[in-house]
Amino acid sequence: MKKLIFLFAFAFVGGQAFSQMYIVTLTKCNATHLSNCNPTAITYLNVLTKIDPTGNVTYTCIDNRFTISQDPSALITLNQELNSIISQGYKLV
Image (tube, rainbow, N blue to C red; front, side):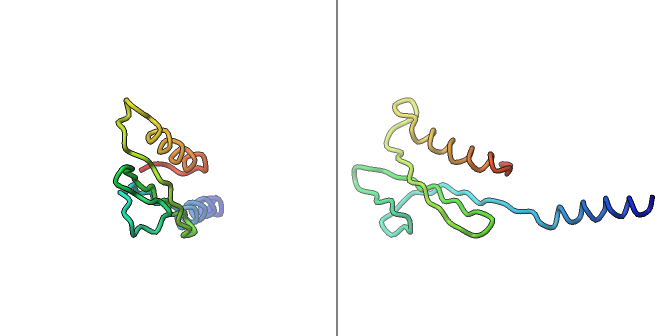
């Protein structure tokens, strides 16, 4: 019985020690941003920056010229990006 309790305790601690997380942030794009999004006077862009657990950075350009009622494409893009993270087993906090 002691061995079984020790096994469960070790499995619990081991599972907690290898926690991983994504970091996601939404910022405004400017001309010096590292992404390939190029804001102009006509186009207003936000950049969704994702950093995965291995440290790889990906950028997604999101057009925000219109409100959601006029064109929901910005919200759709954000939804798709967050759903792709959730589908990998991560939780939103």
